[in-house]
Each structure stands twice: as structure tokens, then as C-alpha cells.
Length: 418
Image 1: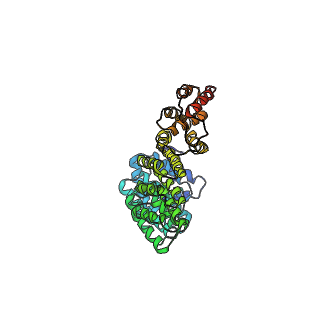
Image 2: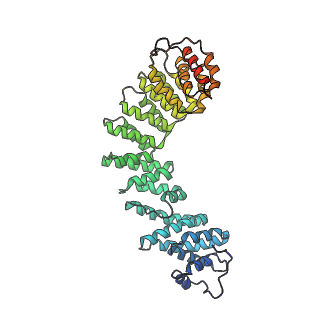
Image 3: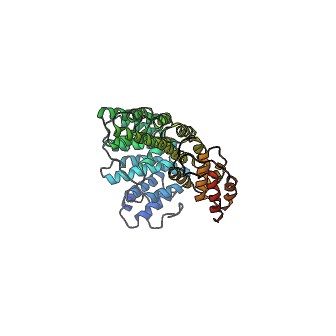
């Protein structure tokens, strides 16, 4: 790349509007165009024309790199003059050329003053909106996500308005709105999409995906109603859509359904996915409540699984201690549905398991012993030996298999580990 101060070589034609057009067709033309862009002695108008010519011949990025290295006052002057050139070229009937200039105009945004940025945004948004209305978005050097995110709130407002129209590719608009729209825009667009779903009675996968992408009050209400509706297929689809945005606003509903013994089993199971996606302390407290009170053991185990996913090692002891005392526990279930899940947490769980050996909960103590057999190390042996006299036996476990007996056995196992 030439220096910004590199003069045009002796004998070369000086930059002019006619020469710039000529250089687009000659072998040495691209280098002359780049020299013109970087030469501070050249008038800003001609430097802008040279940049536009580089776009024409597919060398836009090279010109933008030279512009980026120019002094700020030079860039400001050039950009102001280049914007209208790019705006006109964006209307070229040749699709590739129009797309190249759309991307070039967006590239200018990073160098533009706030007023020029507003002008650029005001040009780009209608073009993107027009693409949405015909059902496709042209992909160039810059992704649509990147462009709309840079433009900011105005993008969300445009997408929200577009959702109220009969877009042929509304899932794409919904996906974009979910990514770049603020809360207000998503709420507006979501309400429009719900109205469309009601009007068209649309329950295709694309509709569920679009609803999940946008979220917001109207969407949440619609999905919650569908989740409790008579169609099992729609109910499951609605719950899966609720998982997408991880909206804390639906947590109370999710916990209610997950803990409802009258709810469909598959819907309940999927609702745990909503709780896991949202996470946070309220979700953990709700899961502990389900573990301690639900009458179905498999639901309790499912809640334990989600608790570990949400809280990792920190959730092990609270979750184990939440399991009801006095009920029967099959050893195979404890191994498959508790121990194996805890093992997956890896090394950070070891000190938690050692602490669990002193838990008031027999299930927590036994589970800790069983898990330490798999993940424990030699230094854990003293803690295991300490509870060697624990004569507690879990209901449902093989006769004579007390916590102390197992702890003593596992202590000998871990002593052999490095």
C-alpha cells in the first residue's frame, strides 16, 4: 500500500474526473486510484471519486484501508462528499454493483460524523426494509446483523414496523428483531407477530421459532396459553419457544407447570428446559421446592439435573439435602441419576463432596461417598474414614449397606489413587 504522502509519479496523468474513470480500465489504474485517495494534495472531491472507482473495480477494501489511515479532517471531508456518490450508485440496476455500494456506504459509517451517520442510516434502512418485503436479504461484505446492530434503535423500529406487514420471510425479520431490537421494538414486533399467528392459525415450526426469537409480553402470554392448551404438539412447541429468549418474566409460569402433577409429562419435562435456560437464584429456589415436594421421583431427579446445570458444584449440597427423607431410594437410581451427574462436574466438585460427608441428609452423605469412589483422591481418605461408624442405612438400598461401611470401603479405594 502506498504512503499517504506518496506523490503521483512524474509523467503520470494527474487525477481528474475523466482520468479516474479511465484508470478503472487500465493495468496500472488501481495503483493510481489508490495513490489519488492517499494524496493530500488532491482535492477531496477527486479523492472521493477515486474511492468510488475502487468500489467499481472490486477494490473497495483497499481504498477503505487508505481512508482509515488518513488524518481525521481529511476523512471527514472525503466522507461527506462520498456519501451522495454511493447513494446514487446503490440504485444501479446491476445487482452486484448496487450491493457493493451498499456495503461501501456502510463502511463509511465508521468514519462519519454523527450527522453523516444519520444520513447513511436513513439511506440504508429503507434498502434493507425493501429486501425484507420481497423475501430475501442480499449478503455482501457486511452482514445484515452487523449493519442493523451498528445503526441501533432505528433498526429495531424498522423491523418492528415490518412485522406488522405481510412479509413473505417473516422468520428472518423476527430473528433480526430478536438480535438487534430493544425491549420496546421487540414488544411491538411481537404483538404484530402474535396477531398474525392468530389470524392465520399458523402453527408451523417457522412461526414457533419466530415467536421464540422475539419474545416480549404479548408473545409470552400467547406461548403460555398454548403451553396449557389442548394440543399436545402445540404445547410442546410453545414451551420450546419459551426457552429461546431466557426471559425471567416467564420463570414463575415455568416453575408452576414443571411442578404441576396434572400437567402433561412431556410438557413438564420441556418446561424444565425453560427453567434451566433462565437460571439465577429464583430458578434455583424453585427447583429446590420441586425436589422437596414433588411426589414423582423422576420429576425430583429431573429437577436435580437442572439444578446442577444452573448452579454447578454450588448446587450439589442444597439439592441433595432437599430430597425428602424417609422415602425409598434405589441404589441404581442414585448411581445413574445423581452420582453420574455429579461426576460430570469434574475436579471442582471434590471439596463439595467432602463437605457433604458431614451433611444432615443421609442421601447427601451416601451420594457423596458413592461419587468420591469415582472422583476422589488419596487425600480424601481421612474424611471418609471419619464417618466409618455411620450406621445409617438408606431405605431401598441393599440390606446391611450402611453409609459407614461404604465410606470405609471407598476410603481404601481412594488411598490407592495418586
